[in-house]
Length: 192
Ligand code: GRF
Image (cartoon, rainbow, N blue to C red; front, side, top):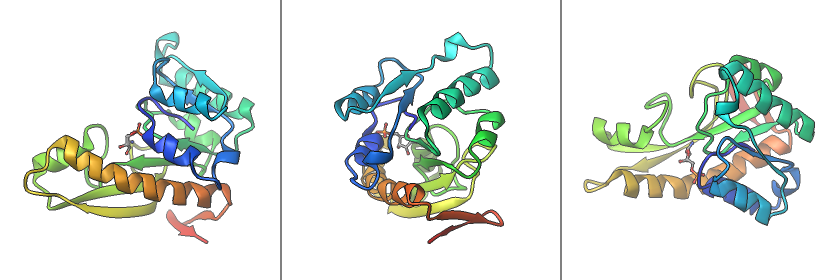
């Protein structure tokens, strides 16, 4: 699992009995990430790969991929990982990388998605779990849940309601991943 920030999704995954035994490593690009503390509290090994130790995205991505492979992990779960990994990373784990994104993709990909949805005045936003491909938030969709926008919503209040849904659907999707129930056929996801 890769995480850069507070790690509430990571926590939800570590608290899921079907998932926890499969979590062999948590990698962060930030040594101070709260996610690393959450992993340590669950006796999950951790590693930090610093962007500043690398010349470019490719070499950073290769270091993260090496750490993942050395751990024996067969798949990768992005849980608030704030760096874009290069195509070489994606190629090493084809259809075996999941990400969670706080909008109904393909609307509002990339950073600050909650802010962008509010600025756009959408009536409904939501959360998407998808397989990571070479693009940014463009991969095949595994699961989506809509979250209605309230008239007085701020980025914080809307993101908080989106996160409630994230903590519900990510454990379901990652359970399907570790149980080998996710397949991609013609760019469409089939969960068995
Ligand atoms: C989540 O909102 C997720 O959708 C996005 O990054 C955020 C991570 O939050 N990719 P947390 O660190 O899991 O609390």
